Image (cartoon, rainbow, N blue to C red; front, side, top):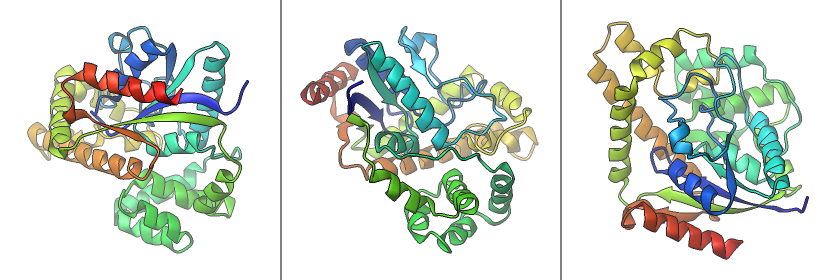
Length: 313
């Protein structure tokens, strides 16, 4: 196999249109899609995670979706290993790998060649940290992280991503080195990939937020409440329980809030998540950004993306 491997990545915030664009690019460039979404990996978590159905896939193979029980943990190290295997398989069959998803840590770790020694997750430590978060809030964990890894604490301060903060603390407690030091050492080895990076975002942020609000309404019409009941009745791992779309409905199930109130909370939390995604991806100067609201429809967006890719191939 020739290195570095040429591939395409499609990133951006939730509800920006990544799936549709990735599918059309796969049809154009004889590609197969590798999902980089930390929640679409779980079985039974379909509506809340906007997992593409067979109609949306249009016959394009999608890898790393819908394969893991919700009581199992899944780490960025697992993703990098699994995605690398998928890439090699796709390339060996003469096809183009297309990485598509909004989990920035997954995408960056894969494309930057971050290597991970096979390190088992410590579920006990992870659950202890999750309990501390539920009792004391995210700032408490950030302060804890800053005591030994100020760099990671600073990087995660604006995102306030509880899952990644917990992982950074757990990594140090189990390995004895900080995750920022580990990542620096890994990057020195270089990446086996030569990606063409496409990003979707909006010049007018409110238009993205309107799409998010509409998507939540559609999720409710599709049966999100029933799915949430089912998912919440299962044993959930420390990673799967962080999914947006289920925990926000708990006050409705307990009778503490109305469905309308919980829906507004869900929309707000999804908008906040999108903002965190944009903060993450905006740091990558190699992403070719497409401003969705500056184009006259999907076909024009697709043509522009193809122009970017053709230049990079």
